[in-house]
Length: 281
Image 1 (cartoon, one colour):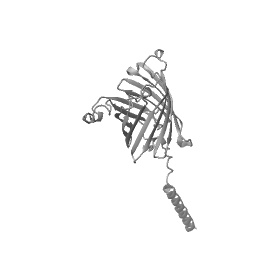
Image 2 (image 1 turned 135 degrees about the vertical axis):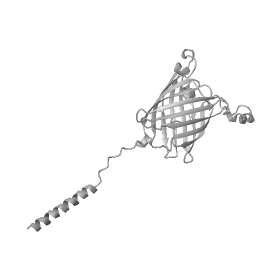
Image 3 (image 1 turned 90 degrees about the vertical axis):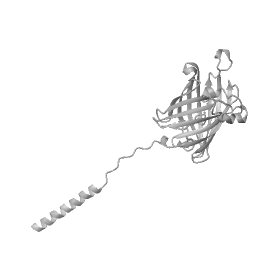
């Protein structure tokens, strides 16, 4: 009898030990990993927040920021002889209009920022995404609003409203259309002129020709209102390196803000070399 009880107790202890070992061997359930923010993924079709001067629909991840430097050299490539142009390093030795831009995303799909050019004009802008192509829509639409002021935002304010529509083509590039209305595009007081606003339709695109190399182009025709001179246009080539994008461009004007672009280029034969440099944070 004692032998039977001893064997039974030994069997129960063995089973209990095996159960405990299995429980210890069972891995604890891993905590659910957070869903990655899709806005943090690189966009191969549109790597930057601007084509040259026109905005794109690239989303800035929430609570992230980006910086952009624009540089437009003041010597026209058609001015003087070719020898003097070479001596001037194709305009790089000349003065330039420089712009510093900073943008921040307070929430998903929204961007706010400011831009200042070396002629002491300051612009404040906002952008919000209304439709997104990758959610069953054929294109993306962003609403745009901005206001700039000369003399460090103390004089001659020019508000603007508009939108930018884009269509990306896989990883190969994108096309853009930007209708906009800009007020106070004439430097004279509105009481002295018949037209003091401009309606504009920007058209641009970006083509990915190599893994990290793109060709870019845009033109900004004025449809109605105040439209002196020639329509401003630009083209260039850019290189993406991580969060940096460096662009070498050629344009027939110096404008980088809506009101500056609406006032047109300097002439159809005047082309200026420049560059953009952007960085995401």
